[in-house]
Image (cartoon, rainbow over all chains, first blue to last red; front, side, top):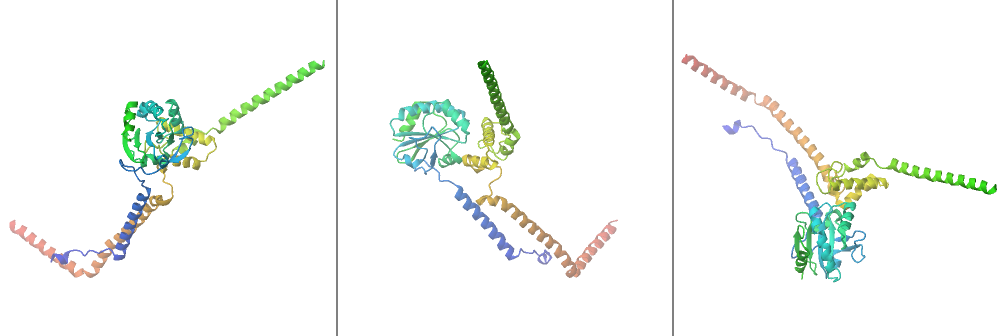
Amino acid sequence: MTETNAPQKRSVPLWAQVTIWVVLVGLLALVGFGLNRASNPMAEIGKPVPDFDLVYFEGYEYNETKEMKLSDLQGKIVVINIWASWCKPCEQEAPDLEEAWQLYKDSDDVVFIGVDYVDTPEGAFGYLKKFGISFPNAPDLQSNISSILNRQMGVPETYLIDREGVLRQIKIGPFSSVAEIQAFIANAE
Amino acid sequence: MRTKKLLITNTWFLAIALVLVLTGLFYQTASAQDTAPTDDEVNAIAKQLFCPVCENTPLDVCPTEACRQWRELIRQMLAEGKTEQEIKDYFVANYGARVLSEPPRTGFNWLVYLVPPVLILAGAFALFNAFKEWTKPKSAEAGSGQGEEAGSSSDEDDYIQRLEEELKNRK
């Protein structure tokens, strides 16, 4: 009785249903493919760091080499410090980093590399000059390096890579002394 | 007499040279000031860019020191004769495409421009069909279901009649 009184539902034609599903699945596939292509490989502690390019600031090259890859430094302990001129905690550790670099630079076993994260040229060079930084420094072009290193919180952050190119430790925030930097580097031995 | 004439000539020569040099310097300064990019010209480009640090803030209204330096960089590049596109390319090369207020019309970014109009068109088509369906059954029922409707109205009349009788009986 009730069945006969109920209004008859008109179903969406099959061709329309198929078209809608094809379009939706196609869009999802496109978005997924795009996201997959855009995502960088990321570093993890205990695993080799994916390779990336370094294009040094003029006057802050490594052994007078303007461009190089991280893999070119295999066999050395690499300390990568991410900083920015607008970052106040970075200023706190800058003199200590330079002092520590002076202790290691002649050994040619440990390399310090500063990576300037999202900065202006004026700000970057002003900062390097202000703190008398002499170790190699490069801009983080398109935030590619910090993205590969899987930057955790912000700046400063420091990454320790051992002689085999494996990420050993991450320091989030500024170092408070030269001794702390030395202890950090000792973890790569 | 001849020496005096020579001295006067030299003095005149020096005076003219000095005037020429000063005029040249003045013209150079004045023309440099004339070609210096205005704040409006700088902001016209800055508003198409976003602050790379403080996300979601257009560069022309961003109050931080870093943004001021970026605006000065735009001014400097304009003064060097760089075009709007060259300046935007520089920012993209350094800070990534995320600094652009509009995604570049390349690769997968086309989805941003194509998907919304396609969805709007699909929605409009679906609505059009739905309206058509909502109006169609009424006219169809009006033609085919007359007996049914008559039946239901007579049922209703009986009910009303009974209700009125009951009310009368109560009175």
